[in-house]
Length: 144
Image 1: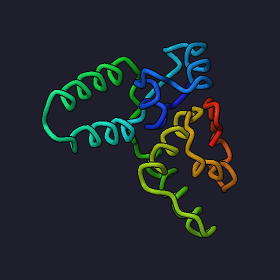
Image 2: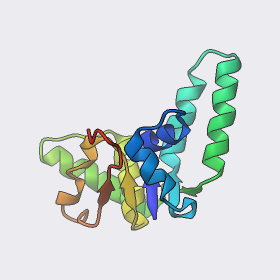
Image 3: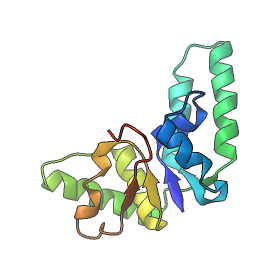
Image 4: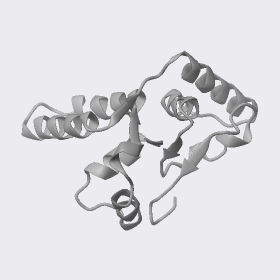
């Protein structure tokens, strides 16, 4: 299973996708992809902050259509335990991660999935105790 980070869902909705991401996405089975509830929240919150109007309505309709076409993974008790562990371990190591990102990583670990993201702050998670099974993939061309 492949868990799409918020930036990956946004990339899917772009007309001019990154070439590396587009190649990866075209070769990936749709049924293998899932969106965590935290990413759903981030996406919808971003749209709801926009001024009312045609653009906001269009984006909401487009985004909910994309979201509804994927498996949705919930933030369950085990995923919350993993997220708190990630946050505590990174904090102890002198790094910090925002709650939504830790929650997304926790959901990916709980589901034995690979997280699809371009965000570099996820990179060190797998180096920590009880997070060794965290897997990450960056299909973007620029590999930020």
